[in-house]
Amino acid sequence: MDNQLSVGRPTILDVARVAGVSHATVSRYLNKRAYVSEQAATAIDQAIREVNYVPSRTARSLVNRQTRAVAFVVRESPTLFFTDPNLSKMAIGANAALSAQNYQMLFMIIDSEQSAARITELIGGGFVDGVILVAMSLNDPAAQAIANTPTPAVTASVPLPDSLVPHVDTDNAGGIETLTRLLHESGFHTIAHLGGPEHEPAAILRHAGYKKALGPAYDPALVDFANQWELEAGRASMRRLLAAGPEIDAVIASSDLLATGALDVLAEQGRRVPEDVSVSGFDDSDWALRAHPPLTTVHQDSYRIGEELAEVVLRQIDGEDLQGFGRIIPNEVVWRESSGPRSDAS
Image (cartoon, rainbow, N blue to C red):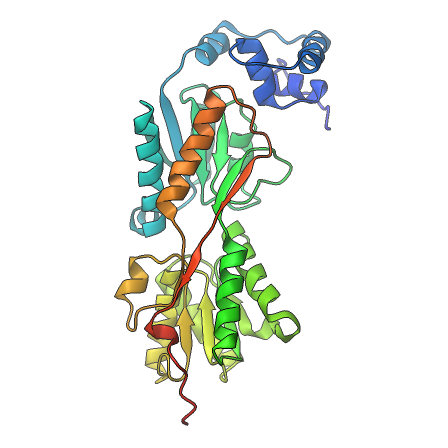
C-alpha cells in the first residue's frame, strides 16, 4: 500500500494508508458509530500517533452531523442526462429508495473540470452523507477523487481501478454475449459491433461479450466505437462500418440510441432491415420501441439498478463495511422485428 503522506496537515487518508485500512474504516473508528475490529482499531491508533493526525473541530462536527442527503453524480452533458432514458429511470429508482428512508437525493452533473473540483469539494466536505457515481469512465480523475473522500460511495459500473468502492451494474458482457449467440444461431454470420465510447466501462464490457461469443470468428475490422452515446455518433460509426465491411448482415450496437443512428444510415443507403441487415441494441429504452422497425435489444432494469445503488450507499451510511462489494443485475434479450428472419434474396 502507498504510504506517501499528504503535503501539509495530515488527513484521514494518511491515517488509512499507514494503518493499511480503508478511509471508511478510519471514519467509523473516529465517529464511534459502528463496529471496527480490535486489530483495525489498534492499527488506526498507531497510525494516528505516527502521522500526528488531529481532527479539526469543523471536520468532526460535519462527520457527526447527518445531512439526510445523498448525491447522484453524473459525468455527462446536461442535455444527455435529461434525455437518456436509462439515466432517468436509474435516478427515479434511486430517489424512490432513498425517499423511503427519509433521504433527499441531490443531482450533481460534472460537465467541466471546474464542476468536478467543486463537486468533489462538496462531497469531501461532508455536505452529503453518501454519493452515487454514474456514467464515469475508468480513468476519470473526478471519480477517483470522490472515491478517496471519507464519504460512503457506490458506482453504477465496474469497480474503479485500485479502489474498493462497491459497485452495482447490469450484466453488460453477458447480455451482449447472449444476443450475439442468438443472432448467429438465427443465421447471421457477418455480425458487426457498433460500440460505445471505448474508454467507458459499459462499452468495454459489451464489446468483450461480443468478442467472446464470436470466438475465432471475431474480426476487429467489423468493430467501430462511437465517440459519444448519441444519435449522430451512431450514424457516423455505422457509415464507417459499412465502408469497412459492406457484406455485414447484422449490427449489434451498444445502446438503443446508437442502434437508431445505424437504422438511419442503413435507410439512407437502401439497406433493408431486417431483410438485408439485422440491427439490435442494448437498454430496451423508448428508442427501441419508437424505432422503425422496433429494435431487438437487451433489456436492463435501470429502475432496479437505481434502487440497488441506493441500498448499498445507505448500508454504508449505517456503518456496514462493503469494501469490494459488487452486485450484477441480470438482463434478458427482447427479440423484435429488427432481427426477423433474414431474406437470402438478392
